[in-house]
Length: 166
Image (cartoon, rainbow, N blue to C red; front, side, top):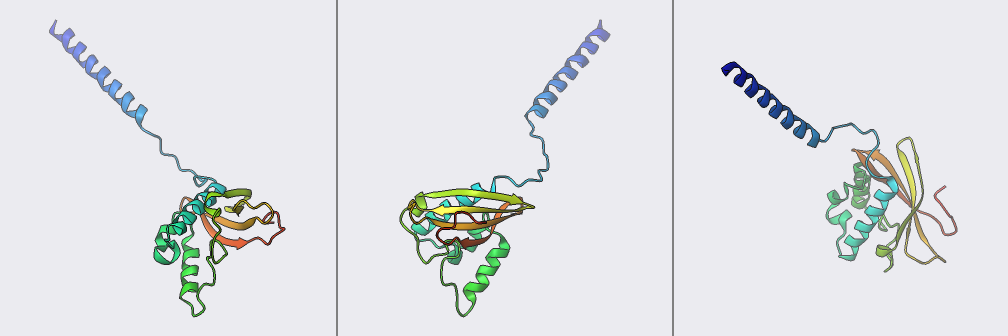
């Protein structure tokens, strides 16, 4: 009888071990390398402008006061270029990300994205700030895949009358 009880105890112990392994492995998340950066470039641009304009409304200038705060959204290469321009004798004449010296009151709450195109790890999107359909304020924002996400690499103002960045 002793041998039967010992076999039964071993079986129960194995079943318990298997049950714990199934529970443990079932709750573990698989780690898979993703070749495509998370988020869509247009969504990253929209998130950046929402954050950036909020900072300006709060009288915080991230570019001059805390450039590292831009790193989740902006390419380090672009930040180095902007820092060099700001330290040059002529400095920077306008806010680089707005391509303007100031912003309108409705820009922080009226941000829209359109015409996003992606090709070979580079994306362009049109960011429209404000609500005035007669004179929309549009920017072409170029993003690149970098450091596991989309980072802003260039911003240019679209002239009035131009519908998209092409």
